[in-house]
Each structure stands twice: as C-alpha cells, then as structure tokens.
Image (tube, rainbow, N blue to C red):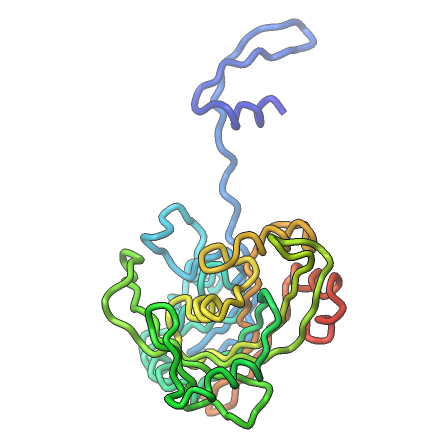
Length: 316
C-alpha cells in the first residue's frame, strides 16, 4: 500500500522509511508505473483470406488519431497482433464510444474492393445499430409532422431536415430522415464549410417509464430503438438523435448530461458507457459470393439494462 500511495503522490525517486523486523532504516528506490496491460483480444465473428469482422469494445479507437493523442490501444494494432502481424485495413468507421461490429480488409486490393462495396450502401450493405435514447419516440407523430408539410422539408437548427426518398409513408413502424451534416476535418476535428446528405432510419423496439426524477420531471422515459445507417457520416446517429431531441444515453458530446447522470445513478450503477452498438452487418462477400449476415451479442451493461427494464428484455 505504501508503493501505491507513492505512485499517486510522487514521481521518480521517493524516499521511503522501511519498517523491518531488524529495526528501522531509510532507503531510496524508484517507484515505477506498472507495465501497460496487453490490448484486449477482439472477438472475431467472420474471417476469410481477404476479410475479418470483429467486435470492437467501447472506448477503443479504431486507429491512432491526433484528436486523442493520449490513447495507446487501437483496434488496428490489436487485430494485427492477434493475426500474427498481418496488416489490416479498416473498411468503415466506428466511433470510439460506440461498440460493435467493424470490418477490416487483410490486403490493399481487398480494401479497395470493399471500399467500393461500402460506397454503394444501403443497396449492398446493411448496417444496423441498437440504441437507448431519452423520451418516447413516436414514429406516427414524426411522420405527421413531416408529411403534413407540403414541401416535405423543415428548417431545424442550421440545416434542412427532410423526409428521405427511402421512407415509406404507409409504414407506421419506421421513419427515415435525411439531415445534412457538416463535413469534419479528420486532422483537426473541426467543421468545414461543406455538408453532405446523412440518412438514418429509426424503428422503435420498446418504451419504458422509470420512477425517478430528472430535472423538472418526476419520472423519466426511454426508448429502445433500432437504427439503420444508410450513409456513414461522422457521429451521424448521435447527431440525428440529438436533433430529434431523443439523445442517446451515455453520449457525453451530443447527449443530455443530466439524463446520463440520472440513468447511471438510478439504473446502471456502474461505469459509464454510451448505449449505442453496431449489432448487425449484412452484405454479399465479393470474394466468396456468399451472403454474410452477422449479429453480435450485447455486452454486460446491456444485459444489466435488460434486467433493470423488463420492457426491453425481449429485444436485448
């Protein structure tokens, strides 16, 4: 315990009085930080000579980033070491705070082929996420709001949100919107003056109301939603749910911090995480011509959520 105390309060050489059976004497030694833990092994769901699909934990970066210079563990390096030094090439992005399925190519030519396939989503690649959000998402209300507008558009914040062509007005279960997002400079993390279409579909799986206060409300409401990612913009799902005022629980950048605090204090009572998970990936493997349809399991905190909220148990 003495060494641990010194690690917390000193650096370098620390004079310590060692109490020994033979008497007391002072000594000086180096208090060294413990060796870094080895990177966690990634669960592999699918592997061929060209592709590898793994389950990325939350709080792990896919690759090095100038925005998170302090991070030392990355999915690219972890998978490369796990595969005996084979170079790997991420085909798409997954936020640091988001857990779930991510695909890697195992050589440059395969990376190029898969990149072209990914550019053609949603026709050829289906990416499905699950998220816990604040409030009750009302699909019928969202459709009424937008389809009652003769131009199918609505000015919201600094951009125009509109019903996407993919939306089916007769489907009462799913709402698909296109809310353009500003392009983010990957090197600086700052917004540019360019914008891109960003299309997300939302389907409600379950709703609940829990009897604890948050802000001015005496109880809180949550929805469990399934999200279809039709385009792949940076933080797309998090921003779209923010603009719909159904923030993702645990999102510290685009979410509702009061809701996050209330949820962790009253429901989870454990480490914080963002409740957004890439749970399903479906596409035709261009090399084997076989349909790949992978659904990842859920982590421990998701299982605890199912135990705490019986309304969600059948979906988790």
